[in-house]
Image (cartoon, rainbow, N blue to C red):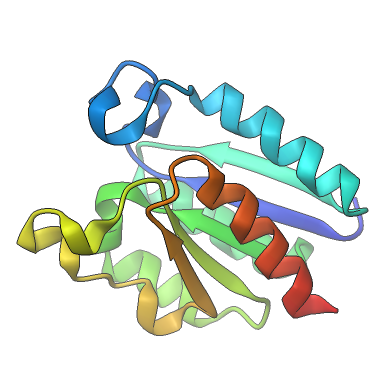
Length: 145
């Protein structure tokens, strides 16, 4: 689909709604996917939404986004703070890349305060719960206009 925004989700995000709801809230990843699809459609864009617990699969999706997408939103979860492979893949992109987090990593454990994604991202949105995804969609689209 033309004008497709890729939304990639990293490890353990498939457990949203049951994992640490005091941090991540009650919404599931399916809830987020539905909200993102509605926002993309309302703005005239398609969406390709993926989640993986496997670093190499995320790298493959980043590469696909670079070939087929107009923008990439990525919540790499724990890989945000550890993955040189994801950093290297993102560095090759020429489309807008928005780093997304449900929680606010800067207000959490010290190891979560370093992002390998931020240096290669167009921008970052965090701390607004699942609404971070919708804000990131709008930011990505506004960057394209």
